Length: 406
Image (cartoon, rainbow, N blue to C red; front, side, top):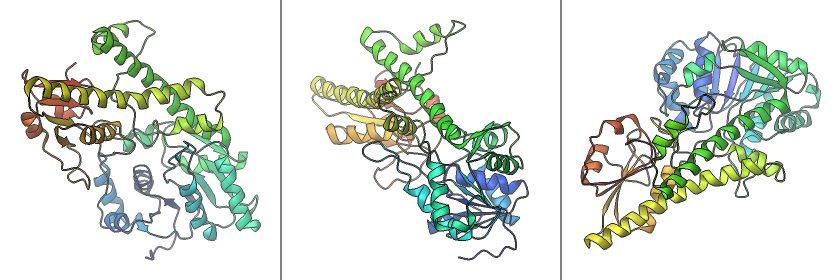
């Protein structure tokens, strides 16, 4: 698909949960943006002014910039002044980062690069990834060595509040040289109101990994504490509330694990590259993964006990599939993992609920009110806002892993 446009300010490679909002927001500031995605369905959807993901305010923004022709979408890049790589970086089975998507997107734009262009990676990446992509570009286009600007600028947004945070959050920008840093800052200043902090590419890459690893460690403490409280017969929610009355204590809220494309993945990039040094980071990652297994075990054991006591198999409602409240994103979701284990390892009838998704290829989704009414055992896995409005039925067994009944 060719896009008829005289001049393109920037190309965004990847139109997922970060790429699409960033491209649309930049377009809303008057920049001419070309979004690129290899999925034809995504391209067709956005070019109609619609969206394929759930994110507050994004649908209206995309329609606005598509109608104004500031955002157009294609399956292939075109000549522009700047190129942004915003594709996934999952990990492989050995927990090492898979940068093949970054490399593939880079190779797609290499033929279009010209002198004085800006090339920025936003995808979360291991340290030295930006330098590796620079080497790839120079190998394919040696005439461009030291004649284009290459930098790394990780996203820093919270799903559910992406549009606001794109504009107002500070950003860390690191180039392969000072000139590249300055060029990238110049571009981001066109639509970011937050402070743009300059550094080098390696520090910027490590900064992103550090931020998410720090969150993972803090969540691991809360999750470990919740399991200790269960053993000790203590209400973890009350305990944390009281402990946080201390002026220098701020314990996070426990959950059924950690999911998403960042916190559940990024710490492994540090662990795999620095295995001897990253002891706390590794242990925290293992704790948060174990919490999902612990929750699944609690549900399965409750089902077995119910069957023993009543002589019949229970109906279990697994409430929530997303990796965090009020979004539709299931990537690395502990709730999804827990639900799969309950389905495969218990004899219960399992009702699956996810109010932010209308259809799923694997699960037959049910309305949350109906599921709650039918269930003998209710497992609260995700704290979606509508769940808090369900009046508690004391006749049901409720396993609260996210604080719905705290």
